Image (cartoon, rainbow, N blue to C red):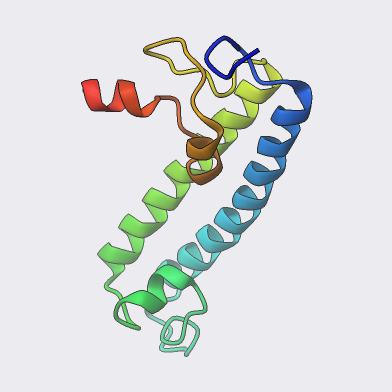
Length: 126
């Protein structure tokens, strides 16, 4: 059976994605906690928020404004929610199915964006 003919991923394939998502969820939750702490500790003049280990913060300025930190935290929370929704789709056996075309989203895409609900084809139609 070719990839095109398959309508669902096998339990073994779903387990691979579940492992990827669990790892990403773990990292995302840690990052979210760091952001939340950085956001709430902005006024204590500690060094926690000036030398963050959080990779997103390291890429830019060492000290982000409260607004920027809040926006990053909100984005991170949304990312966590998307990953959690993907876990539910795995449990429901609907994971990896494009919500527009109904076709399987290629494994390569799901390995990079494990919470994807659209195939590239459907994304390009938008």
